[in-house]
Image (cartoon, rainbow, N blue to C red; front, side, top):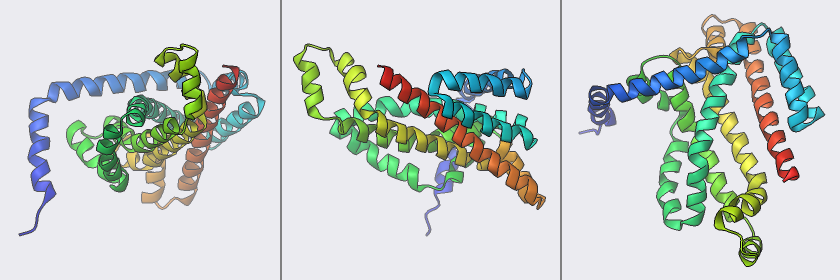
Length: 276
């Protein structure tokens, strides 16, 4: 007799829907409110005004080169006729990456401090990185129905493993001499963490952030299949209608968004690290 995981998981999902419907409704309302607020903020001004604001902010936060690159990326999304879809995608990615980092960063530090925690997390992360990404959408859709909420939940789950692994690696790679120096001068553990370990671990942490952003954007196309909108929906529309131009423009816009978010976050964090 063959084992059918679906026959086991389906009753569990039904039980969750029946007993935690109110809780899931609250999560849905919170995510929709946050996403809607970010999208409204990005779309309330004309495209050229948003581009100008981002360029100026990028200049002060990350430097001239990043500011020019940000203007080029956003300008391409505007000229390609995909401005609204791009802003929807940026909102989704920003929220998903922020939540994924908020979950992965403290767990990664804890795993770097406690070998048992890392041993417990390792098989879970192996499974999370081995399972095909579209599989995450199935339980998310069954619980939260179609729309942006299951898309962002699946994106968060998909983006956590690389950030968590590289956070653990980053803090384990901090030289013991630096930690001992902090202890020798009487620094508190929290001060050692933020003033000594974090700056030393930052290069590897930026790699983890980069991977989290790229994997989140990789889920954008799949999210278009469940009604999340944004550039993923445009890619899906181009594929189903066999419109090569639309699919290519939307794909290049996703690349532009990836470069924009990655360079802005990386440049800002690097400049703050140098200033500290």
